[in-house]
Amino acid sequence: MHTKKIVIGITGASGSIYAKLLLEKLLDIGTPQDNIAVIFTDCGKLVFGYELGEEAISDIAVKRFDNSSFFAPCASGSSDYECMIIIPCTMGMLGRIANGVANDLISRTADVMLKERRKLILVTRETPLSLIHLRNMTTVTEAGGIICPANPSYYSHPKSIEQLAETVVNRALQLAGFKVDSYRWEGK
Image (spheres, rainbow, N blue to C red):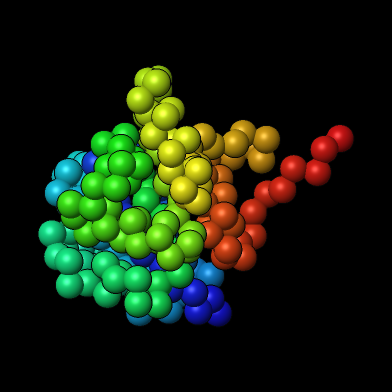
């Protein structure tokens, strides 16, 4: 049973499968539904529905907060949320976080994670990267955040798109401090 409280931000970058698998994995490893909060950007909802089907959004059986609300518990440093994963994370959201622009609940919660020295993991989805993107990644890293690009690993010989995407999800959860069973490279 994992009692850690976590916020999941879902933005409009392609790669909704990562968010879906992450939520499923959190529940599979025994994280209570009440310990998981989800925040979608408007574009995140559209992309999630487009990539996974409209019903996939209603299938999310955890707490959801509106991205325009600043009254959600995770908007305050006094909340007991211990970590946040933004998956997938757009370069626009990265830029707002890097520059302290907390104009919605996702960016405000990320700001709280950084100021309170809690775990913030951004699973970025963009290629190629501009110098602006790289500098924003550096700024977030220097502030204590973790950039975890959605670069799947192949050495585990995944047999499906879901298994391939799960390599990214497992890495993000491990970075957040969750114990998950996953392939570990042992070398030759």
